[in-house]
Image 1 (cartoon, rainbow, N blue to C red):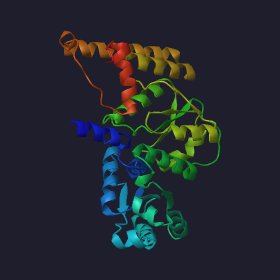
Image 2 (cartoon, rainbow, N blue to C red):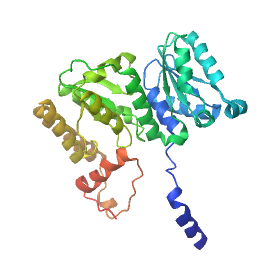
Image 3 (tube, one colour):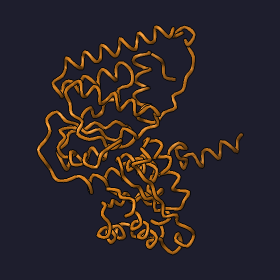
Length: 331
């Protein structure tokens, strides 16, 4: 036991979150959120499995969205794989895709493959747009990979300023959390915004059409739907296009109090206070009625210990929900 405690003390600061995958996975999630794209993983086949996992998380349409891999072996990892990358990009010409995202794994970046130069050299020989994203796993975890990919996409695909669309908003990083029901949450956000008379200019990224990026500079505001990633993109949009972040600093709408605050601020910004009040009232009534039908055994759970296992996106508002709405005591 003493040896275990000593080992924990010496290695504890070096431990990483066992849930989070590497930057390549986060970048793949972002890229695969663009409808009809092709994602090329410049990596060994093992790393390519992360792209497959991201494909499933985004629930992409396999008849529209394609994934490729350079399938680097020992020779390319040691001596470089630029030739293989160039050949794979040129072969992708047969796929008739509108855009190709090139994602990098650790090996090619460590050995010094100039991925950006290869993409530039081959771009004139293909009829699709090429967007290189340097997202090797050693650059960080999947949340940092999400930020890396969002930055690359915003800088390379978004045009100059245009005339703002009144009452319009961008939704940023809805996929960047551990909640498997995130698509339902995104649909709810879009629904309440529509009821308040707000236009979603673009979602960055889920089922995002390539043409949606033309709408990005036209938005008046943005909503970051994650506490784990996406804030850097919001900061860039403010600095570059003057797009103000809405509901900044507020917990996401989980629970009565959080949802009430979040909807109230949106209603004030959009001049839809009455609609926001109605949505709050209807939502709280619906939750109470469901709980009553379920026969929630409050007495049986009295003094019962519970632990929250969640990422920041869900964990932060959930802690507030259980302390403010459920009046639970944090140990």
